[in-house]
Image (cartoon, rainbow, N blue to C red; front, side, top):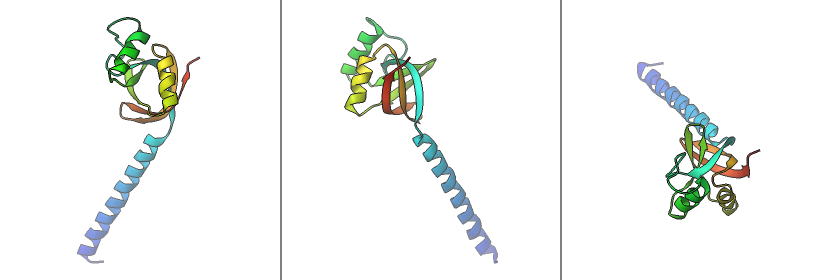
Length: 117
């Protein structure tokens, strides 16, 4: 093999490895996981500014904030497009919930929401 062919081969092997890493990372992000915490809103997180946590969450969401889930010290923004899930989040505002979905950074793409036991 000539020197030029070796370089091309090395580049192709590198690209194949990078593609494999990208695909494994993408599939890990798509894997549904469950998170249990308190339903809040992305603006207030764990620290509500007025009324009860449920009242504050509903008020902030009605003004455009997204729902969030407070798990310990971590606040995850909830990406919930399904009306059923949004209705459940509204009912569980300020309460413990179990959210199942895929994590992308600090955002959970919501697949389902249930009251936590």
